[in-house]
Length: 110
Length: 422
Image 1: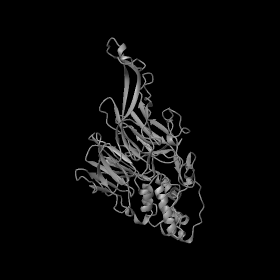
Image 2: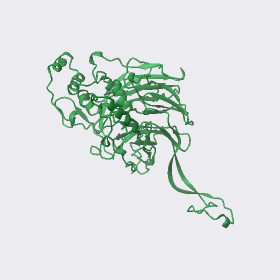
Image 3: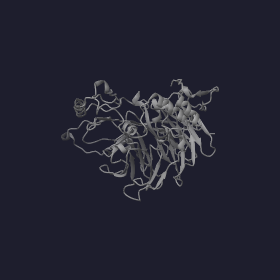
Image 4: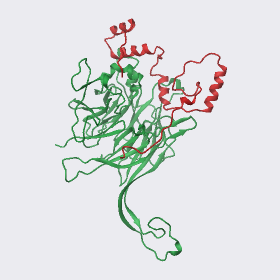
């Protein structure tokens, strides 16, 4: 892990001065500085839903055709897509799909 | 190799056997060798007893999702005859495996030769009785039951009930109760799925049956709460009997508060009077009779609190550490990063940090305590927080039910440590 030097903004300095130096709050400020678009509900639906759908999602022709139909109807550019979403509103490409691994004998068994 | 990463470790009830499951769906069972008569001052070692492929990768065609073969949990059944039984589970399917020994073989069949070829029945002129002859010990594992298709979400826990007849399995949103003999149905006893998934605020993270009261079980959540349920109260245990939650200081709440409060493991003490929970930074011991706060809190790696931003970015903040009790409930153990693991003595309040790595310990050498330096000045032999290797995580540990023997899984290596005798 690299220890990055962050120059604190005036607001962050204020925050640090206000709270009795809570390291968590300092970390939170760092995170908000790096990702200003981070949602208001951190432990909420988005995070949990990402957790419920763990693992890669593969190409699904049904999703693909639905996405194509959606794209045709929408004239505005779509919102930036989470890189974990392979299907749905995003049309998948071969590069999005992960490689399968091969299974061999366990090293533990000697 | 990625498929060698150990994903679960569990001693059986006597401690004679130690099972490990890995990311490749394999189970390896170690057996404690009897102490040798020549060197009685040394405890016996654990050697490989059996290894088998428990789960294979599968594909859910309806959702276009891969079903990992990784073994999430192994739980042993109490031994009732010569064979050993264990439950192993991946994300979707639980299997009951029978591990039995074979040291005799029948010889002198009438209808086939010794090498298995069928004899021509018309050439057989006399009958003989096959005799049992000794053979080299063979340990066979066979799947006896397959409990499938009962979980929409990913199974995180299985727990065998004290009635020796039933067990529970828990996924992110539901808990099911099974009978060990019946595979085509299970009872849903907890369902926290909201009607509208947009309203989802918490998930089930772990569940366990009470060690003595077969009607009681607990489940923990991603919000740091534990619910104790009594199956006598109703068929559906959506309403808890007890609700355990430590009050939070509102002024210290941050973006990370809920994430680090998520409980990754819950374990009853052997006595059944206490339970222990593991969240990201600490281990808490709860008295089942006191719901409003834990009776003991142990800091595992408090120095990480000032690293939460980076730990969120590299996803380490979501690592699920397990915890375990020793046989007498006087000590608890849990893992950390850099292949460190921590042990806490509940009576003396002393704690120790040890490292599981080939470099730091030779076989039969005593482990040296480690220390992470938190202040500005780093003493000799101390390691600074920034030099910790966050890829070397000890998520799974197990303590022998009777002796001071522990098993520690460090990525794809298994370490077994024991107390020196005398």
